[in-house]
Length: 454
Image (tube, rainbow, N blue to C red; front, side):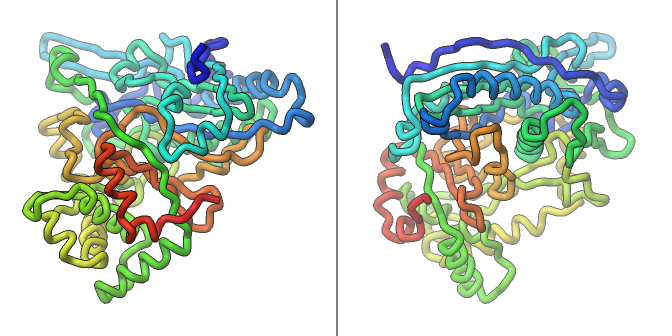
């Protein structure tokens, strides 16, 4: 028997403990521009690996108790994040032609909860240089796209038992929320799990009411007659995936260097690190000097709107900003120059830019296609080290590490997570084809900035 084969032990659906008055008022749950544009991309898949207590200290029923508490906590969390218990629905009309996609919370069995097991150890996940493929089996919705939420759950929790550990993987439909909303949900699930009880007052209730530009919504018409007109499936090429750890000290040095080289104090730590990675990967790819290359950063619109959206706004409120140049110029110029291009892209993303994007979408709606959105000459910085990831506890102490599923992996995808020790350290999950990854690992300047994980 293959020890890396993940076995499903049980699965069930979990409904909200009850329906709140706010949720009743927000039915059906409508989707806005940023949500609808995500229908053809994949679910968000992120999870945390925990160690089991040593066998002498591990109660026989520990896992069953965690599973029972987690199911109950999920039911209570869904009261607040009610749309995640629903399914997508499409309403089509011929006269006049209309095509609407929204969330139906009434005709759904709820969120999915899976208990699985695999005969490998924590060391089998943490020790290899590259993230082992078995990690992709720790998540439901493998290769699913968000439009599949018409027939699949919008949220799945999979608890996978290892020989000496537990992995809790969460898959959430990206048409319902972005990374900010994903981790808001995960944090609330952990908060309710740790508090125990039925009447828990959570610290950050999500804002479910969707934002629409004045005079628009809540139903936005898509210019299609059939899903085949806007749905495509993306298969990732052969990639190696490696986690590179950057200590707070290493990042601080990169920031100081970038600001010094450009004679400024405005470049942030993350802009410095992103520029460093962009230059390093571009060097590893060995492009001709006239090859155009870019660096995209995922950017949160909540604080950029005027007036700003609540940081607890549940939904998508993201776009990407991009710096672009040629490979020759990027490598000829210094780190400070590259970081300044990213800084400018960020500061120029204002309320006007956000509204221009939304208004352009409303006049000509489009659906993102992963294969077209990202090119192998550029890099994409996703996720965020600002999200609270290691604060999520489920009776097993602090997580050992964070891993992601199959979704959104392509040549040049870089996901940023907080380092486990905190303090401003960052882990970067880098996806590259083998020849580019090997060249990056041979880059002495890049590897000198990488720290060994604690």
